[in-house]
Image 1 (cartoon, helix red, strand yellow):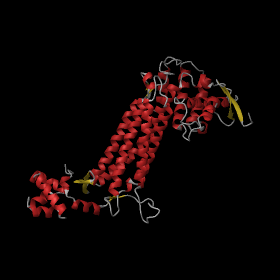
Image 2: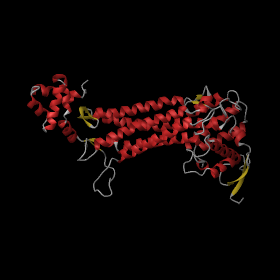
Image 3: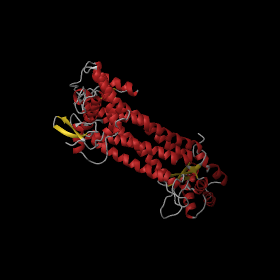
Image 4: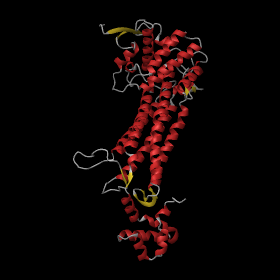
Length: 465
């Protein structure tokens, strides 16, 4: 051992730890044994674990399990962690034990050593707080770690993702209202179809996002019941009577969210279906966003040789060789984020069914992918809104040109002259490079007056209903 390290002990013996570090032996062993990649356990999970430790200390003290001094030390140390004062003390990789035990012990050890510093005891002495007996009292990683993921996921969705998603929905709703009198060609199979308004087209986008938002929020109900107090497998061994409700109530009070004690802790500890479901709803949001930006890419393609019905803000040059080229970069960025989230959801689903018997051993993967998806979707929605959606403008000239050239306006004649004759007018116009009016006049199936009466694009959009 050199002067820059100290010895920390666990049940396997002693190990050297950097003197500046507040973690202990089990954290150090994980650092040494799992130097895999650069992905660290998200701080949101660390903060949620600290909240659980704080709440457990209060509950344990209330139930007469730990004294007032230990409770105060745990509460103070946990509060400092929640405030972000010790972020550098949580260095462990996502790719560790599937239970998350290393990270649970990381938090326990840091709280223990913060307690030692506060009490002027040597760091690593486990005095007056033992990381297992006191900080982890009435707990197991198997109930604590999934509960931390549930708390972190719920808070990030409610406080971060949904508010930003609301702003994007609002931006699309405004476009829909502003564009509701702009009549354009509709398209099915990427071919000309009957008309609609640009506002109606945009209304599909905000409605998709609104439904995705409602599904995400609705399914949070599965994350409120917590497995805390189930300890190792759901039986509640080593947790005092009443602990489950006490700690759940304390967490609900601290977060102002309706967390509660799960009625059946076996189910929520052996599987994490609520978390898997939330990830599925994030995937659905990604699917909606991906469809929307692909629509926008198509409608804006050009500017002269494509549809070019809408114009996107010109944020940066688009080519290193083609002067003046500008690309739909926000669409491309969002599309990549959405595809990545869809891939993350596949991994979470596999982690969900990969558990065995009384415990799922894919907890860090599930938590990491959930929180990464929330962060990416939040950031992408914000970027897409600020740098693209709010600045989209309709290209009225191209929209009118496309509408006037459309052959599918003939659809309005079908109830009057029949599908066969209406089809003949459209085909005759296309083959002879005529307008519908000209083709109709030559074929003589309907008078010019009736043609002009029924071929009314505005009435065909249903916008007067």
